[in-house]
Amino acid sequence: METTQTTHEWRATADEIWAILRDVGRKQEETAQQIKETEKQMKETDKRVGEISNRFGDMVEHMVIPNLLIKFAELGFTFTKANRTVIEDREHNIFTEVDALLENGDKVMAVEIKTKPGIGDIDGHIKRMGKLRAYADLHNDRRVYLGAVAGVVFNKSEKTYALKKGLYVIEPSGDTFNITPPTGSYYPHEW
Image 1 (tube, helix red, strand yellow):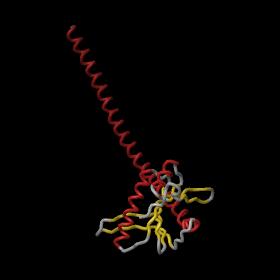
Image 2 (tube, one colour; image 1 turned 90 degrees about the horizontal axis):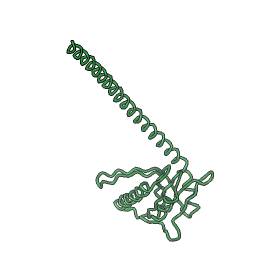
Image 3 (cartoon, helix red, strand yellow; image 1 turned 180 degrees about the vertical axis):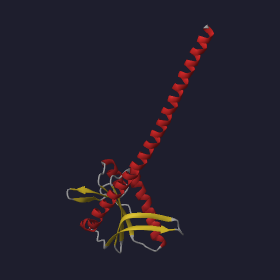
């Protein structure tokens, strides 16, 4: 009788263990499903944030570009046209995009527009300037190329870095924006 009771206890205990394991398995499946759903929601959120950021960038470009000619004229530059430019030169492997390219017969000012420019954005624009110069040389364009970085929010360290690299800095000021040229111990870099 004691053996039968022990066997029944073991079966009851085994049944309880199996029930607990099945419950754990269900919870693991539910958790895995929740993780998948969370990852899906995070991807959707990232996509929406990217779209908003792109729209905001487009808005900034449309607000800044029309006034760039006027503001640079105040610094003594007479640019006759401003446009967004994409270069795709497969033969020479030169691919780049410029948010605003201001031009005249002697000079070209390539402006990169960011919401909050970082060091990487500034370094990226310097590389872009090299590509623009290489492309210009291939087409016998001997104009002087200059660079500028525009930002809605410019941290002091990034602003100083851009100026040290010879770039003009464009940032908001009241209802409009100011352009800070690299002056003093800094000088405009020419490409």
